[in-house]
Image (cartoon, rainbow, N blue to C red):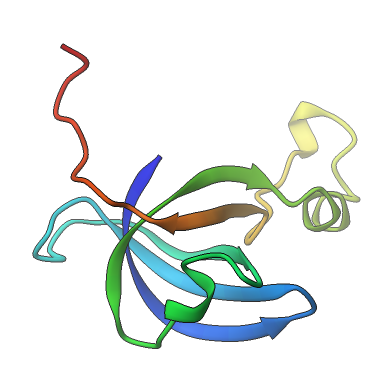
Length: 107
């Protein structure tokens, strides 16, 4: 998945970094799609050494749910009626910078 991200905060982790980002769908940063997404990098990956606060770039990776965060935040949810929103459970694992622009269609 290709996203345009603007880093707000870089936190050192045991084997990489956690980055809080805002996700935009346009090159001019006018169309905010998601605020406060947590991105995870691995030490030694191409993007890990490029992380800087208040920079923007296109990154490749995949979305994941942090199960520990989801479980801890939903302890009162025992049915669909008691379901809750768990902030910060969605994460994006970053592989590296995108080398080309995204395709417009699958044709």
